[in-house]
Image (cartoon, rainbow, N blue to C red):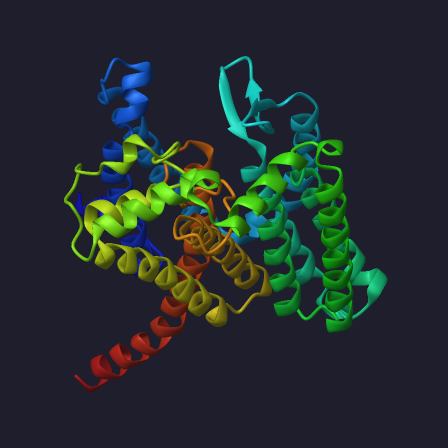
Length: 395
């Protein structure tokens, strides 16, 4: 065990945050899958618990291997990743598995595996943007030399994700804008793309409001916004049940496994798992979960500021920012601050590819941290040797 712990490098605080979120995930998912188990497994929750635990452990394994890879290899992989991601997204739109009227999953027939292509696309695009910004630093203010090579793949990926998952597209687009700002892209170009994007969203919203059935999932988007604005319990069932869970949880909670709203919430193990956590563990746990994600972002930013190279610095910020952004969206949905989006709580909600790609993203952050540790050791070693040589000569 000691030998294995010695092989774990990188920021220990991030590792601790991941372990705590993983333990919470197993507890919360086990408590919230009862309705799913009664529906498909005659009340037996063990298969779901074992599967989820296996997914969590495999995610930790992916994180371990990812943090052992040098950031330079990720930079080389970026072009291949984005070249694979765009066709996969296009294929998902054409022939992906549809759940809740959204084609988000792609089936691999040979191994009978289903995965959400947008999860892979998020990692691929962040890799590509970080690499391109790092390579183009000499002419970073140039429109054709730097801005276009970055923004064109960003627009392509986000447009392909948007029909099935608008919230993911919006989060990814925002993350890329943050990276472009930190990467010193000309600010007027960033403002222009923000303006164009805002105008496009407004026009799309007006069109959907008047012709909801003309666009795929247009009626769903309109209904969610109307329900959120209306605020009536009969039209906002999911959020009302989440509010009941939060209100009855109080400060200390009902206790592990004692949730009642898990029997009424449609997806208590994924989209609304934060409400179940508050109901069972109370307000203190709600604050702790928020604090853990903020620690993750803070430590990643510290790693980024200490990196000597631009690519790992941007990669650490991009990977951590989108995960924490997604976590905040999930939690805001549970407390009815934003309309229902269907975003899982990273590393906590039940899922396969969402947990695995989140683990890989954190592994990349830890890879940058690991390289910092190596650089620090190299800087400290010569000074230590000099001291030892002086001591030996005096003796």
